[in-house]
Length: 338
Image 1 (spheres, rainbow, N blue to C red):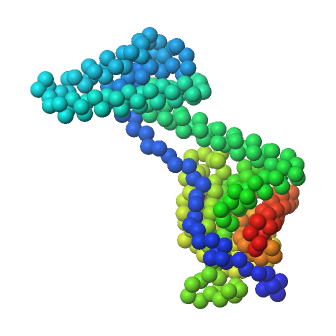
Image 2: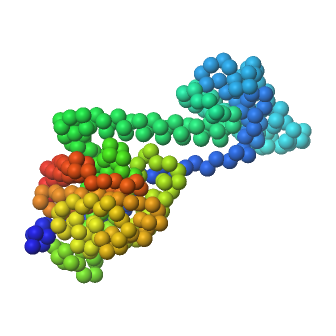
């Protein structure tokens, strides 16, 4: 059959890798850490920092000079130690004060680099400054991805250049395919994408025997524009999906891997056509598009894109996914010789 004539690239033959998830870490914020005194940012240790954002106006309109930082630090430290303090304790006080001053200086630099916050966002506590910094960096990263995507899709020449650049910088096959997942989610609005790779069943597999091979989830990405609730749901879906494996012809990854034909499933509520129907229902996924990646005539991977919204069949979207997958596979094959 056509399925049996297709070659197989095992994950073991490509590289030994672990999943790398494109998720964004959250920094814990302790709102009790800081307070505001006379228009200055202060922490429990007594360090104070005027908010200027590159201007001479602080949040509370204070006109205190930066020199007051040193005076405030000395006063705050002095009440914590008796006049009989040992020299070692004095040294510790000095070291703590210097460290606090360095931290305050870094916060001043950070505030000067950040854009002016929109109305309604306060930057009085250090935790608020860090929260706003994270938000700003995420927005810049999303904007960068969007601009790179638009440039890549602006012409066939630019798309080829983008693919060549991705492949030249990739350390292994999963790294070569992941940017395709990111870019296609950004361009076409898919919320979540997966990369499934074949791996040998150590106890039974024989090279080239598809019946003794399993497909495993090796990479997944989230659309960077997701809201917090949708993001959390898709993270949970990804975590559960990591426990699934598929034989050829089983489930969406297995069928696409065996037939080399893309699939568009407008509904994911039937566990006969979509094995993870229960998980899809639980976390709000409604439609998926699956496309194979072929390297020099051999099946190398299956990419699957998901959306939480209802989508009608889109031939142009499908054709674009096929084209990029083909370009990626061809470029990787030319680079590695597979």
